[in-house]
Length: 219
Ligand code: TMP
Image (cartoon, rainbow, N blue to C red; front, top):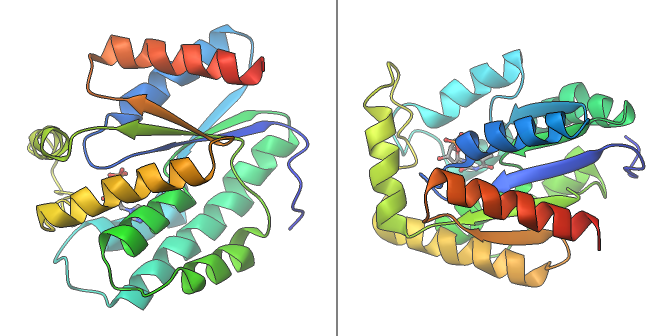
């Protein structure tokens, strides 16, 4: 896999549960399209048909059904499929790809959140195998108070037939750790991350995202 991303743009959206990523991606995609860009959206896990099968294994059912290694291998398998089938081909055609989650989710959830790995070496090695030096151009981190986010997330799940609550059903300290982990990642790479306060109304958050995007790309 080539490692440069000369064409197109890859923008990821990250955040804990109930941060409102999917609604914001839909709105931001509309904004980019009306500005004349070709836009492709994807998600992890589950951006492809095969990925949807992996997603079902990961987000439904008992929270302890996989050991931690099995779990991250499934996330990276899904990521590899998404990269090779969706992200890279669209970028080669000069499109803007928006992804609902990417590698920062694995670091936030499986490293900072779950506390089961002493260091990040396994994840960083797997990322290197799956993606090489490839990285998102911009990462929006939608930051929200953990309790507010989880409440939103449980409310949304009430409308789902298959309840995707495997990660929500982990204790609150896990969610606090992953929130702080995300903020730490943003601090480490300020040139890639844009932290957005996601506690406002949907319109307010959209406005902040568009403003921050324009500011960043015109720098
Ligand atoms: P979503 O509900 O935002 O689509 O994400 C699905 C769940 O998967 C969510 O609880 C976060 C979790 N997840 C990880 O734990 N690690 C990862 O690498 C990814 C991509 C998602």
